[in-house]
Image (spheres, rainbow, N blue to C red):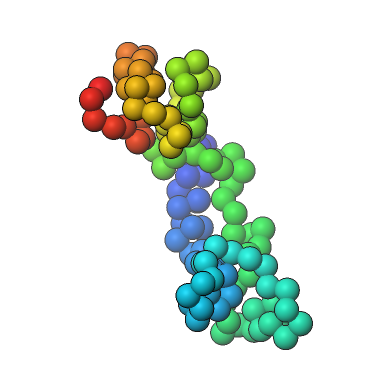
Length: 124
């Protein structure tokens, strides 16, 4: 069942438009992360077809596989060694704020228990 839903998610996401902040390409100071258009005369808010698509519920992935890694396992963010216990049967991403000493400790413990790490650093 999950394999089929992962294929559905891949197919849906391939058709999904890139949702950027309206006119963010025109101003250098504007980021591209999505903001809902609220202007009275904003053509994107008025849903003029040539101006792009609005973020809608229908573009989401199936609820059963939301947050899953493409390999088919749920992805868990880990900050310390104690959090590896709740990561059994999933893939692990080590948080960016974890230092090298603790990161290497997490990596050795994960390889010993057979857990795959998505962002390993050298040394373990």
